[in-house]
Image (cartoon, rainbow, N blue to C red; front, top):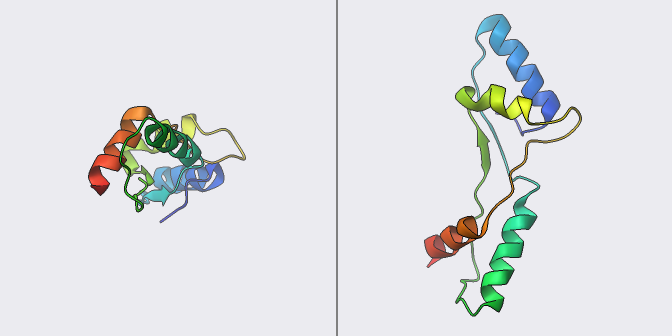
Length: 95
C-alpha cells in the first residue's frame, strides 16, 4: 500500500505497466483543512457537531491511478478539496 505521493504513484504505474503490479494508495489528503473549514462553518451556523468525526481517506485504486497521476504534479501529493456537502456528510455520519 502506498501513500499518495506523486513519486509513489509514478512507480506504481511503471510497475503496473511492466508486470501487472496491483495495489492501492491511501492517506489523509492535505486538503483535509478544507473539511475543517466547512466543519467550523457549520459550528458557527449553529449546527450541533459531535466532538469525534471520522475524516475520509483519499483512496486511489488501480482503476483511478492514471487519473490521479495526471492530476498530481511532480514532487507533490494527490489531494482533494472537500465541500460543504462533504462536511455535512461527515457530521451526519458521526451522529
